[in-house]
Image (cartoon, rainbow over all chains, first blue to last red; front, side, top):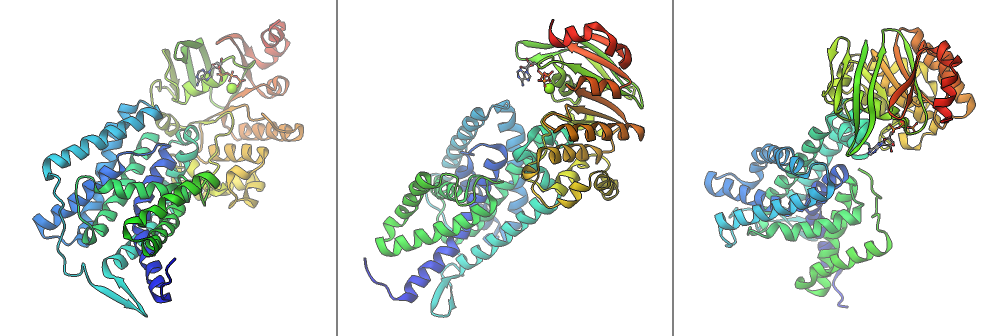
Amino acid sequence: MRNFPPEIVMEAVANGLLTGAVYGLVALGLTLVYGVLHIINFAHGALLTLAMYAAWVAWAAFGLDPYVAILPLVPIFFALGYGVQRLVIGPASRGEDSNILLVTLGLSIVLENAMLAIFRSDTLSVQVDYAMEVIEAGPMLLSFPRVVGFGVAFVVAAVLFVLLRMTDTGRAIRAVAKERTGAALVGIDVGHVYAVTFGIGTACLAVAACLLLPSFYVNPRVGNAFVLVAFTIVVLGGMGSVPGALLGGLVIGVVESLSGLYLGDSLGQLGIFVIFILVLLFKPTGLFGARA
Amino acid sequence: MLEVRDLVAGYGLTRVLEGVSLDVTAGEIVAVLGSNGAGKTTLNMVLSGLVKPRSGEVRFAGERITGLSPAQVMARGLIQVPEGRKIFPNLNVRENLELGSYRRAKANRAKNLEKVFATFPRLRERVAQAAGTLSGGEQQMLAIGRGMMAEPKLLILDEPSLGLSPLLVEEMFTLIRRLHGEGLAIMLVEQNVAQSLDLADRAYVLEHGAFALAGPAAEVRENPELKRAYLGL
Ligand SMILES: Nc1ncnc2c1ncn2[C@@H]1O[C@H](COP(=O)(O)OP(=O)(O)OP(=O)(O)O)[C@@H](O)[C@H]1O
Ligand SMILES: [Mg+2]
């Protein structure tokens, strides 16, 4: 193994943490939906792609900076997720979890092909003047978009934490996750809570999309790459665990960054899948068990 | 207060309730007895709107509530403490109780929380404990406390003494008597026949989805049919 000077390794770790927070944001939506609805949402990747196109259109057509676009896109994607669960996934699945799986899979195929038809398979990107900017932190050089991504991801996680702990809606979400009958008996509308949860998961994607756009290209399949990583994070953090998703994201970010450094960029993702297999083998409940 | 007429209900192809009629009037304790699998819990699930009946009618406080959602039913004051407690294991004691007033009596949340803690001092000692780690008896207290948070007009208790030690069973019946003393109408579903009949004003005995026996508790107790319905003799 090659020896790098400590500041290079430190910088790789820091960059890994920064990217990992945004990975964690993508995983957050996935783990929340899993924890409450007990399904793996196969449309998560396609919805992330859709959010990235939406942020791109906001920039290309309306001149909105991707970071500013967070403000309109969060309510729009919350409403979209709410509607998709309430009007499509819920009715189509008729209460059978295995049906939900197929419905989300079908939804992702429809979305991907629609985007392919509209945007072709060209890669698109935004040009913003801060894309290449770096921030000096001691001996390290950190990319500005990643630092922003890190900060915003933590703000979103904190807001979500407060929502789930301190509000009746949040408590209802946690209640439904573990005890549907009891929830219905205290007057919680379980269908509504499912849709709200799906909406929150989709809104997290809208934020992630805006954070990723300054440094990543958009194409009709871009979301899947991130969701594959997010799925590893969800397993690592414990299926359904919100803090687990964020911490898992940080771990995976660092693993990716370090294996990129030592094994070369093209093998950066290799480390992630080694971790994935190791977790499945030795700690299938993840670092944080299966709490919602 | 509660009028049930010719209720037929089941799951898939199986019929569980085969035409059940029952009344609970204001301020009354009514016991619903019956051996395992007779359909008591199914009856409760239909009353709370969790299982849709095939035919028949449920009226509560003069209003037809058949076909309403569970949230709509409980908003009217028909509150059920279900079999198996169904508390939220991942939430702490306080959060469980607060969710009891999620849809009803929210304005009185603080006042009712005090009242529940006064009734169950044990719960006050454990406000921050995850409900899933409470003992069985404490979980039952929590389930009843959660029901009380919604200021019930009629409280349905489904086997509240299930899995409790004899001493706690005694305490449970004392508590039910006290709630009744405060003017609450109670429908008590139980396997503890003798104690339930001591407590109740009237009783129904469910057998294979229909009432085999109904009447004032004292009469039901003396009826030889009771033994037959219960022991299947
Ligand atoms: N969700 C369900 N799906 C299918 N059948 C069910 C379901 N719930 C209950 N049953 C059946 O309905 C019948 C009545 O069950 P129910 O739970 O109402 O009985 P119970 O009188 O409450 O019994 P216990 O005293 O043991 O609680 C049983 O034969 C049971 O197997
Ligand atoms: Mg039962």
